[in-house]
Amino acid sequence: MATKAARLRCLRPSTITAPPVSFVPHNARPFATAAPEPSATETAPSHRRPTTFKDRLNAGPSFTEFVSAPETTLPPDEALELRTALVGPAGQQKEITRLPSWLKTPIANNSNYKKIKSDLRGLNLHTVCEEARCPNISDCWGGSDKSAATATIMLMGDTCTRGCRFCSVKTSRAPPPLDAHEPEHTAEALSRWGLGYVVLTSVDRDDLPDGGASHFAETIMKIKQKAPSMRVEALTGDYAGDLEMVARVAASGLDVYAHNVETVEELTPMVRDRRAGFRQSLRVLKKAKEVRPELITKTSIMLGLGETEEQLWEALRELRKVDVDVVTFGQYMRPTKRHMKVHEYVTPTVFEMWRQRALDMGFLYCASGPLVRSSYKAGEAFIENVLKKRAHGSHTAVSTGAGLDAESIAA
Image 1 (cartoon, helix red, strand yellow):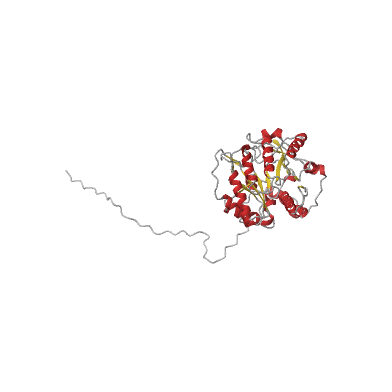
Image 2 (image 1 turned 45 degrees about the vertical axis):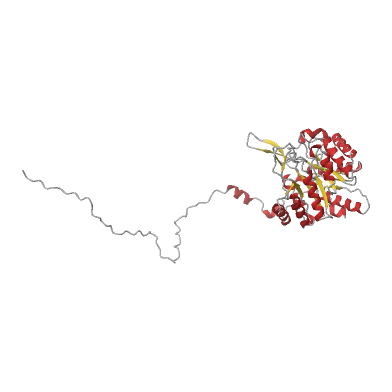
């Protein structure tokens, strides 16, 4: 039997090294040489997007033609006419009323506005200007210098225990505790600005035994210690009807005691928190006057909530019965969609009419206008002027419309 030759298999194949292959691009060119010019037959690919809208825009009038167009003066009836617009997707559009031109204000962004805001944040202070989204913030904070500016300091934090349907301040049943250093910080900030007149207000603190009256009074006393000549206006809450707390604040050294009735008596349950009341507010203003008869008392009423003319007359008569000296009228402006709707945008002519009516009823001072608020800057200049005249032994009634220059008239 023939012997078979054994077949051996190599388990490690031999390594074959392929010669290196270099890939040279067809259009390779050495460095530092100019790129070849494209030939006339080659067409570059186009990546340009359609610009139908831009083409139509460029075909229209230029920006120079737009801004140089002659201004047309509208008649009063047309100028005060409310404009409407349809908003929303097709088939679900709804009609809305645009904000009237007399209620539009510039955006606050100048250097003085930023300085005041920086000072407030550095001392952990709050203002009702920001928390309540006041439309006058650009006017009040945007003076040529800090001495011409006004900021209404809001004490006791930025969270209120009440929930009025017109107010945008945050609410909570249990707000953070009071800052024990706030009275000192507030006095320091105001003395640093060198203001002649300052407004203090606060959130309602029904969670505190005294409603925060002691904290408020302490702040006023520290301000008077650091700046005795500074005029202080306190816009307070009703302290749940505790008149002893009202007396404590009234006797703390302030110059103007302000408490807002906000609206007429008939609308109070729908506008204000259920713990507030028109009659309760009248008792607060009356008590402040009884504690210090020389004290100026002040209140504010919003228009555009659905009040009637007769209801406003009655509200003013009730305010005069408790010797309120100052009243202001302003337009209610809805802060957010969660708040009550605006019933009516009142025209400047109607505001002027109520200003004159208030003065005829014997109010010492009245500021009335769409953008007037309870701490209106022009009003402060007039009240400061009254206080100075009282100090010199004279008593003069003053008034202003929304568009008057307070400094020129008060001088």
